[in-house]
Image (cartoon, rainbow, N blue to C red; front, side):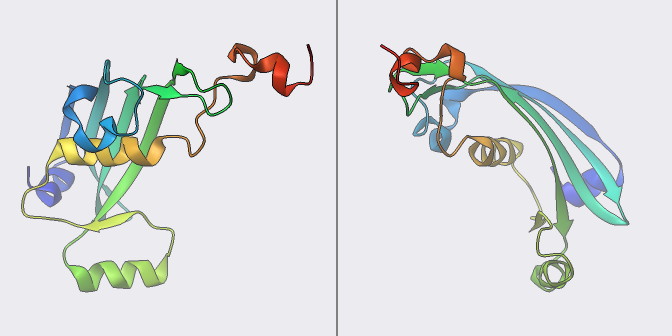
Length: 143
């Protein structure tokens, strides 16, 4: 897709991708079963072309407390601003260092955008919810 045109037209696209099809993400998972559901919507935000990306997935991770697999419920909503070139991106980053922006390529791969967002949304230290961890009693000092 042409991302700037997509943003200007306020287009929308939704779909599903199997986690097994995401090579970079698969390396972070305990298993590759499941899928990611996404919605990509174009918009002009403050006059800048942008993509709004909503993702929902349930990847299987390894709990770093008990070292067993668990299903992690992941929901992410983000806005990615689309600069026309490197100079525009640098100017935006000087004005707002926290702005999430990329240089728009002539063609953008939706699967790559979704996989990037998933990778950024994974927890740094994956853990079961406290009450669900099999080693809960060990780290609470109970026996």
